[in-house]
Amino acid sequence: MNNNNKKFLTLSVQAARRQAHSSSVPPQPVPPLLQTLQRYLTALEPLLPPDELEHTRRIVQKFGCPGGLGEKLQRELIKRAKHSHNWISDWWVQWAYLECRQPLAVHSNPAISLPKRDFTDWRGQLVFASKLIAGVLDFKARVDSGKLALEYMRGQPLCMELFPQLFSSCRIPGPKHDLVVHYGRPRRGPAHITVVRNYQFFQLDVYNSDGTPLTESQIHAQLLRIRSQSWKTDKQPMGILTSEHRHTWGQAYTRLLRDKINKESVRLIEKSIFTLCLDSPVMRISDEKYSSRMAAQILHGGGTFSNSGNRWFDKTLQFVVGEDGSWGLLYEHATAEGPPIATLLDHVLEYCKKPDRMRAPLVPLPMPKKLYFYINSEIKWDLEMAKQNLDILINDLDIKCFNFQCFGKEFVKQLKLSPNSFIQVAIQLAYYRVHSEVCAACDITSLRMFQGGRTDYIRSPTNQMLSFIRAFDDGAVSREAKVQLLREAVDAYSVLTEQSLMGQGIDRHLLGLKLQAIEEGLSVPRIFMDTAYGLATHWKLRTGQVPANTDSVMCFGPLVPDGYAVCYNPQQDHVHFSITAFNCCEETNAEKLALTLERSLRDLQELFQPTV
Image 1 (cartoon, one colour):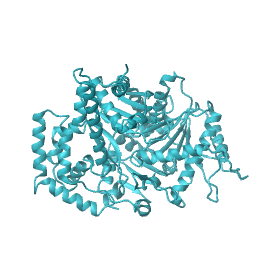
Image 2 (cartoon, one colour):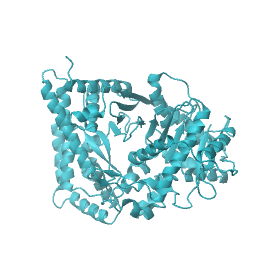
Image 3 (cartoon, rainbow, N blue to C red):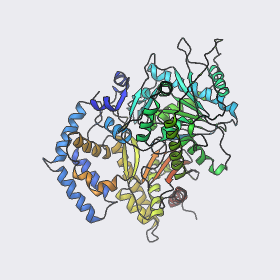
Image 4 (cartoon, helix red, strand yellow):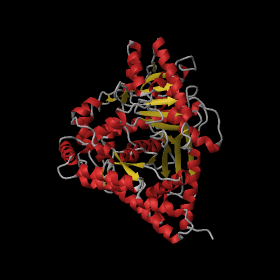
């Protein structure tokens, strides 16, 4: 493990398990320098006027010329790749997550809202929560025993090393950067989860003394005990501290842990296998707005007067169960990625279909341990500021979820087009119709085909996408010509997707070159100080496809103040969407983009199925 990894990721089991989880996949390649630079210039073409593009072209050419700085940095990256598990992943986690100082709530942690269950009160809530806990523990047992089936994509095995890191891990705030601590071990790791209800945290041991997991009925009995110990009181919502700006929370964290009781409580939360949040009822709302409300509840808890105090945003896995049948998962992004989370949720959903056949042993269980906090005047002030700041952030976030029901991925496949690429074109078309311009957009692709691979971006718009968008609302262009332009736009995006999946994307490579220069103590190369690079990485559209087999809705906040985040989950005959924007920006409006996206998708359908 290299020094950066030691410094920024304290993952106690990482090295020991790498061999088992990633030996069957190749190392991530460093793309050729000139290839990346040429593709970068091509990506800039739809975004820049010709004179600015020419200015940037000269800067890029100088950077990539024989014997130039780019070549020197490329050689060092290739050397780094030979001597490290993955040449970019540790840097990426450090740069994108651990050094980022924005709050985890909204800005970083993704939320997944899952299909509503058939219960409507606290009794059903606890029965389902018991099943959920048992299902997650069943999945963890497969991971720990090495029995989790190896996953494949396009016939190629995928890196599985993220799975063990999901459990008993937590992000720790720091003054300049955070770190991730992993307490899990195949044997003798933590044996408890954290349960939080009415802002009160509990340590719930989920294994018997012989190491077997508690049965559902045993877990249910323990949750009933927790409920009886957590009636609404004047308890302070300690979890809200974790929603703060990372520097602010880092300072408060240091003050909080000066007290021995606080330190013990915090460590038990951090070490726990995962957190279960038993949320209180929220105000009833119309069916039309229900999915947006539920996504918001999972994402941030609804505010300081709702369930935001029932979160510990630093925790890698937080399962949320409401009293009205709503449930979901909030995860911390430095440790977890979408595809492994989808695998976990698929397992839990299948487990929940099975009846509980295990009889509970007639063994008395210890009372769940309530975690206490000593709150002095300083901590009280930290809490008050955190409450104010979180409510401001929540009120600033506009969320719109909708289910597009005119068609799903089956219709697009019948056209012999990629559903993901088709939806990306529709998103850019909708953005253009609202804002009369295209913008830098990133779609997330997985690099799990490589050892320790995390993600890269697929960039849009492409030149082909821009040509189609400009022609689409032009009455002088024939329907046949529009169909051809659309096919070219979708195919061009599919080519970019393929390049990224094969480790030939441009964004992680460019970041690696920049960070290599910084590591060597050099000035940041001019290519990265160019205004074009700033524009190209000001992601006004942050997008992501949910790789799920169920009707789940993913949600996270925009990457920039004047941007959007658009998540989508294409099913056979419908597509779930969530769109977020910040109210403080007068130009962006989640509702307007959602309505325009719906219309754009229908218009694209009409292009292939014209009504007589």
